[in-house]
Amino acid sequence: MKPEVSEHAAPEDGVRRKSVVPVICYPVDGLAQPDISAYRKAREGWTKVEELLVPARDARCFSVPAGSFFRVVSVEGPQVGDLDLFSAIDPTERFYSGKTRALHGTHLSTGDRLWSSFPHFRPMATITEDTLDWYGFDAFGGSVHDVIGTRCDPYTHKLLSGDDYHHCCHSNLTRALAAHLKQPTDAVEHLVHDVLNVFMCTGFTRDTGQYFMKASPVRPGDFLEFFAEIDLVGALSACPGGDCGQEHSSDVAACHPLLIEIYRPAEQPVGWRTSEKSAYGRGHGL
Ligand SMILES: [Zn+2]
Image 1 (cartoon, rainbow, N blue to C red):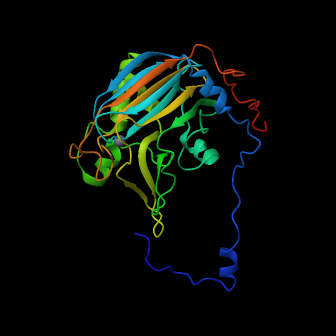
Image 2 (cartoon, rainbow, N blue to C red; image 1 turned 120 degrees about the vertical axis):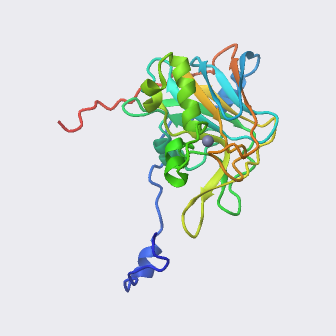
Image 3 (spheres, rainbow, N blue to C red; image 1 turned 90 degrees about the vertical axis):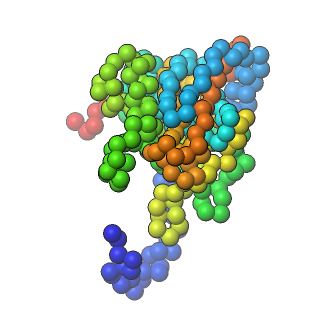
């Protein structure tokens, strides 16, 4: 355990050092901004081409062609979803939650993008509508749709409790991906990655910096909408934590399914092109 009182006295100029004003690590002013009004215009006359219900405490994969939209929709009751994204061409190109966090902050909303892993590193999807954007940050420092958590998993659960639990999001996503790729779970588990925690309300405690969760404010009818910038395979797990207000990695919490809706626009957004892989030449100084 970390000591409750620090072992070392502050130096003479400690107060001054602590008062240094922070700078943003990755200013995104120079990044090409998505034209949300063009995306929204493309929704006029769109066609819903698929609906898929993700059962509680389970996961499903779904395919979304570049240029189409998809929504994660709350149905029946408050429920958190753990979302993985893969390139449909190459599943080793995957959502990179850490770098997405570095670029867009701890919690995502409209206009933020989901970036892919190195060396590809390009927008996989853009968030085009978020019915929970009213929530902002609460008095505890909590907000929704985080990229700070990882996904509940049986390894951490075993470490902390000694028990085996087989319906953590990590296992759900592994089974869903194995079914989608028609491969055994052992062959695909390493492709499962840190998620976007859709609808989950999280933050870090102000005093100890610990990762916290609280009951999601999501209600049936709420949705998070994405535009696919490349051909995608999504994997969504309806977390065994339910609204994540109490506990996860068990069958205790009330859980609900989540609905995936996929929409094909009549015309693509004006000026839109599928995203390009990183232009870095990969010389790495050699
Ligand atoms: Zn989970």
